[in-house]
Length: 165
Image (cartoon, rainbow, N blue to C red; front, side, top):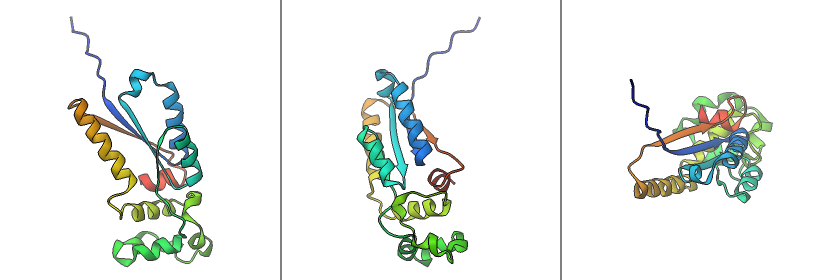
């Protein structure tokens, strides 16, 4: 006769990318018990400043990876040394895309979210790094448990698909 398996309980970091990821995290947060919430940490990442502000008002950790710059400004800031021209060549002549603001969301442009993520990660002292550092410190004080990371997004949208791919 086999022994029953011991119930495993892991600290879990849920990362929601884009609008779909944010909606799923919000719904999940409502379903978790207080005991489960002690081990569940959530971070929502998006280009859309408005969506992020809405979820932040509900108590969610949010990270906006865009700025008030246009796509053209971000490409110029990153420059040729960052390899941007290798994966964004088709958009280089799209005037509407180049003049679009990055904080309005990706609007189905995966390249826009990838570009914003590359720009955001240039600053090593960004909000995401601070949240992850804080989470690791809290986890180390609690126990030596493994941290399970779950990424939630749509593969059909702009922000989720562009930042994940």
